[in-house]
Image (cartoon, rainbow, N blue to C red; front, side):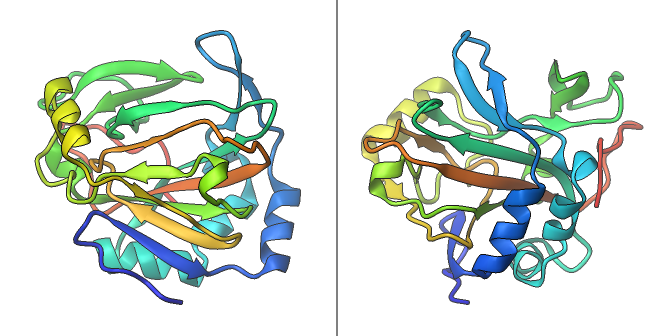
Length: 230
């Protein structure tokens, strides 16, 4: 498996899961159709570490662990699993952003935690930057994702300045460069949560399913606990 350096804030890996493993994972996943907050159809599923044994096993797959441990160390653990299912019926755009919210066991006042929200009944908050700097997202691609499939777009190095204001995001976006993350079926894309990323609608819509796993490398402060760890 070829792995690029993580200094830019992301890694693109060659095929890490064989076709049989991918097909077995697809068969085990829950239905994905959901309604977006805007009222349109947006396909996805949350809480997969709790809901799906196959996703828990995926988080322990040697190729996935190798990438996570390479960035976070041997004691890292998975804290969240999501499924994104872009298709002709659910072909959305995602604006430039950082992944800031984490899922927690309960809501309580704790220094440095802000922006509380609830998603599917699970409390979420924005933690201190130090927590986000010790996290990594690993996306496992269940379908080929080429330039026409609305791939993830990233701005290398944009993860090093903490949480960015909107004007800072706009400035980085204008300067670029922007990299398209082209990934084959069974391949992995890993990136830091603070890395600026986006995606456009597919220009030739087809199935683009991705299991998004988040890993962390430390306990939380203020009496807070990760909603899940695997």
